[in-house]
Amino acid sequence: MKYLFVHQNFPAQYVHLLRRLAARGQDEILFLTENNRAMLDGVRKVVRRVPRAAHASTHRDAQDFELACIRAQAVAGSGEQLKSLGFVPDIVIGHHGWGELLNVQDVWPNVPLLGYYEFYYNETGFDVGFDPEFPLPAGNSPRVRTKNAVNLIALNSPGHGQTPTDFQLSTYPDWATPRISVLREGVDLDICRPNPAISKKPITLGGYKVAPEDKLVTYVARDLEPYRGFHVMMRALPRLLAARPDIRVIMVGGDGVSYGAKSPVGTWRERMMGEIGDRVDWSRVHFVGKVPYEGYIKLLQRSDAHVYLTYPFVTSWSLREALATGCALVGSNTAPVQEFVQHRKTGLLTPFHNPEALADSVLELLENRALSTRLRRYARAWAEKHLDMKEYLENYEKLIADVIEGRV
Image 1: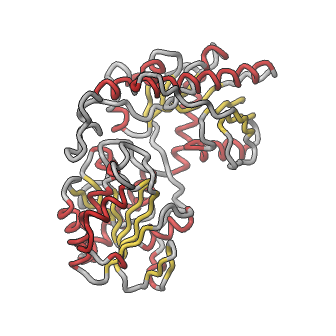
Image 2: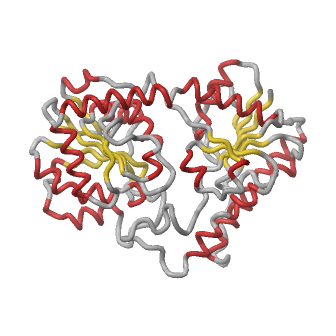
Image 3: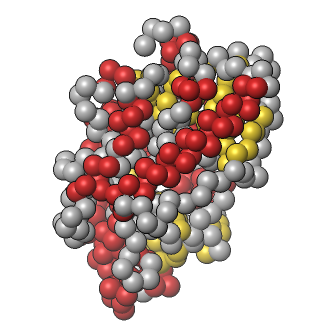
């Protein structure tokens, strides 16, 4: 088999599939991407140049689409070069989000395409308008609609789609869902696993020492921002830290913005620290930035209560990894989290907009050892049943075969 993967970041969410395919040593695997230092044995990176940005003179609502068209043109140009060298893939697999796949059909018109559909933007009912603190600015509805330009072109082009959750599928129009299969993603259950012994001795995480007697509360996001409930977590701190002097809080995440708008002044972390001021003892709250994966897993294993909050939006990998690690989990009662967490069975669910309720849920886990132990056990059991990496990859290869054979 000849595979062509397309994604601006290598190896992206395809890392586990790539390793599985490469380990067999039977296939030719090319990955068309922008340059980075990542490498995988058995996978040939084909590097394309980073495209120019959209012109400042382009209409504000069309700038994302202009950049998508530039990327599509660059990918098609690289594809033509591969084709001239005799490379014809049996399937093209890639992510639709950045427009890179829009012109692949012009290069290889008869080659099956499996595209990743991550999210369809809606003006109501999902992330937009969910948080009354940050309403959609007046006149921005057209911008939300035009963000679906790539989605709509892709859905009206040849190929089949995949998405990882029922929630993400639900964001798409009814007429589009037959074109998209739900392929539930797995985690490495051997790496993401409970380790009770880790809490029996002091450990250092992110440069901070955590003693066995400390009650460690953890929060993880790619970036510390409202889409992941960072402002809610911060507002829960005064109640949380006042309740118990033994609580330590470690927050993982950068100061950038992955989703939503930037803070009007400074970073969201700076803004929220300024809002809370001296109502908490900041020596017990540690911001560690982005940490190596090994340290991150140790953090989850050591956590006494782990918080995961999100708007009705794409769920983070960290939610899956927290369940697999057997965290005592407090999650927001939003639809994407409810697909993974059952209240008082595999975790506690709390209203997204209520910092006091969040603090009370965390305290319940810290004070009710029997509940915490039961939730940890069932979280791990749920992960073993629903997040098994081997089953995920077997389903992935079955979907690829179905696309190639025209069964979907």
